[in-house]
Amino acid sequence: MADFTYENPFGKPEEPSFMTVNHDPECIFCKIASGEIKVELAYDDEHVAAFNDINPQAPHHLLIIPKKHIPRVGDIGEEDAHLLQAINRAAVELARKLGVFDEGYRLVINSGDNGGQTVYHLHCHFLAGRFMRWPPG
Ligand code: AMP
Ligand code: ZN
Image (cartoon, rainbow, N blue to C red):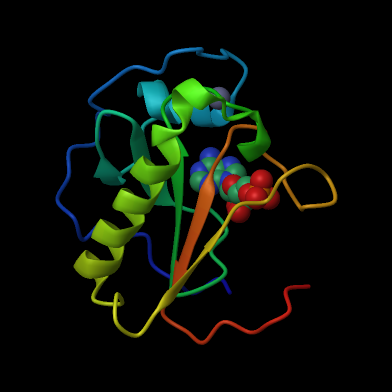
């Protein structure tokens, strides 16, 4: 699916509002979260940011990432439990802004190699704009 646009309809600033903690200088998503790599942010708050996936699998395909470097979802500790709520809050805001809250969307977190994870900085895929089949491949 190569014909999706990368326009940012959100009018948000490109600079993230916070630097990452637990920053991994080799991590691509830490670089995005810290502003070292500049991308248009569709959502940005104290804890998480969202931006378009570079290889979209749906008309709307964004990644919601914590600003803290956490490799896998299973690595979230008690002290970071609020990050799952922050991710959901971001997803709801994105869904409402994109006008897909009622028609639906899919949130996916891949974990580990068998889970299909390729970037080891926790991220939640936000997919919308088409019917999502089940089961996943
Ligand atoms: P996963 O396979 O669940 O680890 O997902 C990683 C996702 O990150 C893939 O969908 C990639 O297309 C996406 N991705 C990798 N590098 C970038 C980047 N620089 N900007 C945006 N998305 C990226
Ligand atoms: Zn990272």
